[in-house]
Amino acid sequence: MSEPQIGRALASGLHQAITELMPTRVEFYESWITPKRIREGQLGRARVTAVISFLREEGAAYDAVMFQAGRYTTDWTLDTLSGPRRAMLNQLPRPLRVRGVLGLADRVVRRLHDEVRLEYRVRRGVAVVSVEDSLFCQVREPTELPMCRFYGAVIERCLEVFGLEGAAESSKCRATGESGCELIVDTTGRETSDQA
Image (cartoon, rainbow, N blue to C red):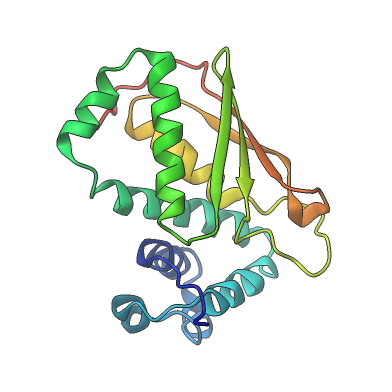
């Protein structure tokens, strides 16, 4: 059985974020992810998991890299979204647009690797998003801080692209010893003018 592959957008997002935020560490991380491997689609789960594992040891840089990688990955994935689909989402009333955009965030995440899923429920503009099989939160020993920042960045960027504000905060994380990962996303803020 072959190793599960990781989507190019995720690998590219990680590589770009590391290059920009940790330029002195690029050579180290290119032991696992290189532009050539990314282009050729030769990145299995083990290589990306190794990068994530070492990034966790980088302290505050982990969150910064995951945030930026999530934004890049989302932008590059949404670039493939058709014009009519973008227009349809932008024309929906706010409550339906929030749900539509969260559904889109789930599709973005599913393209990154086969096993992850986002499930969500929204009530009065506040979404509870469960992350199933998070690639970032698989740890040998529990951590003190949640490791779900990448998924939060994907959700926030998807909302932003479609003119909605929303901050994703981790309420549960498998990395800290919880049974699963959960993000709370408050979308009750004002709409932005940065619609796609």
